[in-house]
Length: 572
Image 1 (cartoon, rainbow, N blue to C red):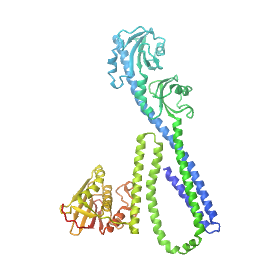
Image 2: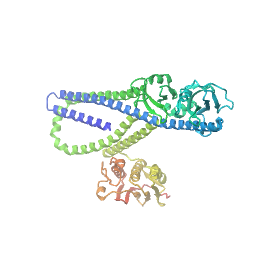
Image 3: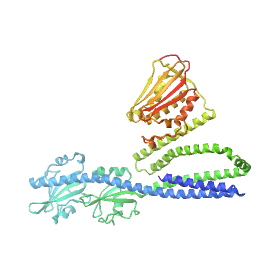
Image 4: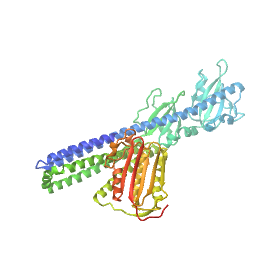
């Protein structure tokens, strides 16, 4: 991803800055060296801002193109379906008129396509002399002259049996605005006998074919080879569209100048018809998206500048007051090597674990900004939420381990119902287990006490971690949570039929940042930070208990916990 490349740029800039700072310590004018490093960081950050804006613009353009292609394809399917039904009606009406000399009533025509029954207003026949011969909406049609209509003239002197789609006009018979879909009528021997006409409701046609486009904030128009708009989507300005497309070359394969007018257009020819579908993306909408991305990047840049200036000021103060301390630190470097090695391992581990969910949050947040629909934004929002939860769990684990090391973790013993405590934590994982087809069973021995005296929160934290691991690394089979009690200790176990781990891997199972590599599963999706088992051990030992793990590859894993009992002799 591009964000990973930007992180590498930041890392390179920080390394250069650090090298210059260390180099400057060997000179009297150390502050000048720090200032030079700071200027380089600011310059690098400015370059990153400019680069990120260019990348965002490219991604927005790609998103717009995807939207245009997607909406064009889905709309073409609806248009072709609608016009195929209309053409079927025209051909059938022509055949029946040639055979019987009459058209069926309108109700019988539309019953063949109930989903489009409002699409066709009328089916009519114009005779060879240009006068109305028959109509599906009246048994005794008035002799109306229609020989001056374009949809009659186009067939009068042509021998082609082709479909023609007229401009919108007010019907002389129906009295409503309609689009005429026509075919010629030929008698035996090829003699011209008139024209069969299906009058379409343009508003209904727009509704059934262009509604999804209008809902997405785009516009669409059905345009003939003469450049005139036949149908436009809801809310579209037909005159504006007509003006923008007036110089379009309809035998060309590309749209007009994409940077002219209020819309960016994509043209798609409707197969078998002399019309084209134009889908337009508002230029103003593209500008708004680019503005928000630029604004967000600019804000991030200024925040970064503030932090850099604040940090540089602190360095100047530190240099002024602790020059002698630096010399003492250099002399004690040998003593600090061991601590530095441990610190480096910790920083390497935690930086990787923190960066993974942060990359997810930042990357998908950017995609949310560029998303073209609510469903797409929801999908990215779900990924952001998952990354944030992962980050929250990691930070909580680190804080708990730090508290335990510092001796600041206290225990709060309360009395809880045994079944309620363990059932509440098992229920948290039942959905994920059932989703994978696993059996998750809680078994509490009959002789186990009805009440348990323990630190409820910490015990639930340990159980939650163990059951989560069992569900995560078990592909089929079952997971058993067993609770029993001896005279002096509680005996708790979590047993699964998962992938298991080898004896070599078990040796460091309770070490921090010990990410076990499992070859028979996709660890890129399931591997954690390597802190869970370490925290479980620390918490159990804090409660004066013990935790042990037994495992066999491809057989399963069993984790057993022993905790001292309190005074609770009531039995289940």
